[in-house]
Image (cartoon, rainbow, N blue to C red; front, top):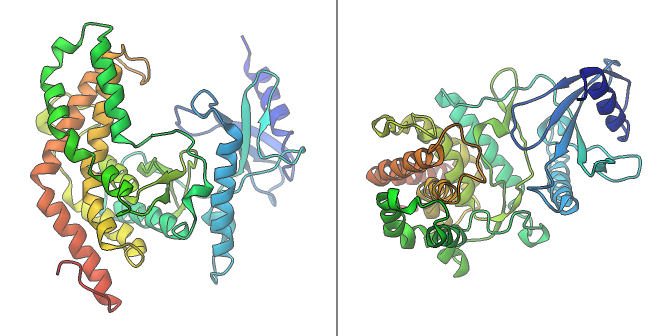
Length: 384
């Protein structure tokens, strides 16, 4: 087995494939991600930046070249816009990929693993859990600004890295196949969950139908808008959106709904006691205010009204995926105990029920926030 010294030497060898400045002074494992292995390359030269070396999981992200092209296209577009903004700091406000000596932005090692390197952002932090309205607002601000920077990008320029990632019709087909195969004889134990899925299937396909009908613009979306994908500075002010692997064409409601799913639930994602699953409306309001302050001026009425549909869709979709994996024998998501995926699915469906019960209030908060922004800019009231 590889010891720590050998591992460090291998990491240094990998890092030296990239055109870093300064001298490597140390290596530290970095972050808590479950998909990519990440190391902080500490610079001995204090006048030069540190770097992040990251292994790309090519089993999930199969086309590393297209993945890298997506990230470069998006980050370069943001940098070009930042150059026009007085006082903007490109090194702090957008990720920077580092080239290899072969003029690529990734390196394939002798074991077939793929690696990339980013410039490290000093004096930043992230939170796994949102606990204050200030944090929620800054998260909304960050993801809203990210969308705004990319609203003029032709989404067709990007590769769909994980096809049908947020396509509920595709996820329902996967679920139906898992039910029909019933490899582990588990369908008999989940009849209430199957009924819930079937009762909601048509309504949850509304965003897909709106998109196909041309009522929603296809945009560049992040597709993994959990709060720890926002870096904040030492004053808890949003600085940069990270983890751009799932950048793809999509609908704004996907990013809005996914972020809300991870913010609004007062209980953990896999809470066993369904009574504990309650909504934190102040956090939702703060996130919506931050997000819409950045996006409202270019979004049309149909797109704005789709946002709360996304709030219901995303927990429903992840619940469908959890239950599908349970029926398939827990082959996709890591589980900590027997029935973990079923417990996760039940918790997500309970969250959907709570969101449905409070749909009118959620919608009212969004529309009031929109109209507050619109009126301050002298534009139309969308509630009329």
